[in-house]
Length: 277
Image (cartoon, rainbow, N blue to C red; front, top):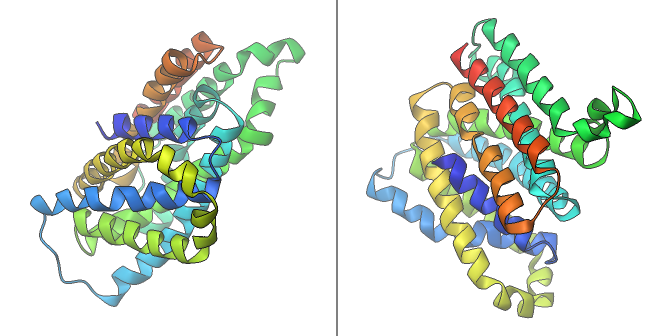
């Protein structure tokens, strides 16, 4: 369900493509914030140490960079070409989680890595006419490379989120994270808000739906991080790539649907293999 929430929020990021990226980033957080309060129906406000706020600060900086790059990728291309690359996050998490959390699945995870790579090859199979290695090259240039960086950074934020949740609870961590990010972005880019008032007002309904979807996804994902290993939770959350490809085809009429959906399913299977390791 968290994956579906992600896919919906990605679709609205795409829908808001012409709006200033900094404005989208600010309101992505600001509009999500009040909906995260519903998480406190299930969790109380905990007592936390100073370490918690250090994790919040580091996580927020990495998250801002990752989300900014994600928005830039969606502005430049479709959901089907960009979002499936996020399936590399579990691959990176095998190593990130070991370094940060001491979590390392068995060697069966290596099979999952190979399947994810095979799926990514399928995503760009149409470019094979230019050479057998062209589909692989497509991942390491332009938008593909940018999304690889996003996948890596989201691996870091997922691991840091796990630490933050262990020091508090899912509702409190998510709320403080979005509050901190909202304050930082609003202070830094307040002029952007003033310059884009008309566009913000006309697109407010889209921000509203996106905020609900993000809050829904984050609370569920945070609970999953608390209950299981980070690679396991994030691998299942990557079901968002399949939903994103379907949304891209149905609502944005994106091309190369067959290779995108097949590649996405293969990559998701690889992510699940990593999970089962």
